[in-house]
Length: 379
Image (cartoon, rainbow, N blue to C red; front, side):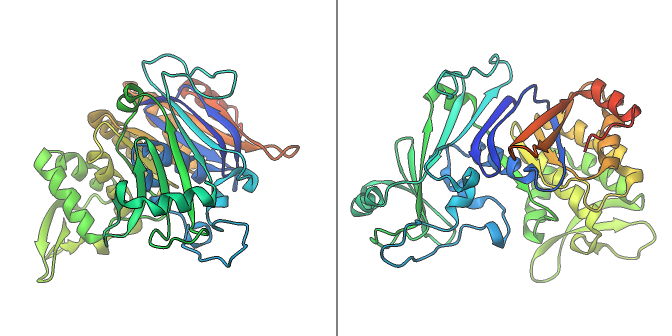
């Protein structure tokens, strides 16, 4: 697990630092204070050993990194990449740095970088001439490809070049240079599998079936069933059935003559089961979920938090989630007062009206409970 995390020059963050991270971390804040961007930063960072992670950030069309072919003489390399940089300042490097729990405090050096005990991911736009040089010898470099075989990333040692048009030798090829600055020991100690559930994200039917199979084989399907019953008490059991075209997850509900395809269930059920499947299949890793309250009625939220805490503990998974909901914050406070075996933190992101910079206010279980009792705004 990470105990500290620092973000510099990424999206809306000039310099943001989170300390005292817990197993379960809830990110709150007003609109446009960087909640989703913080998850993106952590997700990118966990993929430091696989820089194609940059291409898998689940952003919407307005923020996506599509391939653009620019005219000769154009100054921007790619209209998508500058969106990663704070205030579009692509001349400044993005720096992401984390510290593992049990490795001491995050040590910051005079030059603003992290100590050797931490891994540091540096992202900067590369000079087009350097990219052209790379293209001329790309056959000698290790490659990361997508499902269709298209090259996404060239790798040379611990340095990466991410390209959106790798087959052209144009000097205007859209690309970014990613150079993780770390020792092999730091890489080994801070390497995590991670999953990102974006807003309203639910798994495909094939993914549900595949992940449920893994959960069933590991014997964790009972906890999945108990969570489903929190959402709908009629739930009796899950089953993989074929409809003649594919195998799909089905749910048996009391009072119904035949099982229902899980894809036909409501948003709340699919949302929380997707999260539980992600936790169960990311052992010793990181799970990030945007707007965790989606589809959940306030009456079940305390029990849902308890289930998340238990699953995270059982699978040794660290959770980062965002919310807009005061009810979800209050439910987390109540749940973690009872689930004393696991720790919890709330981070409220605030944007300054003076300099437009984002800072974080930290609440542990005790201070959050006191703030809620006093009626203070914690979202």
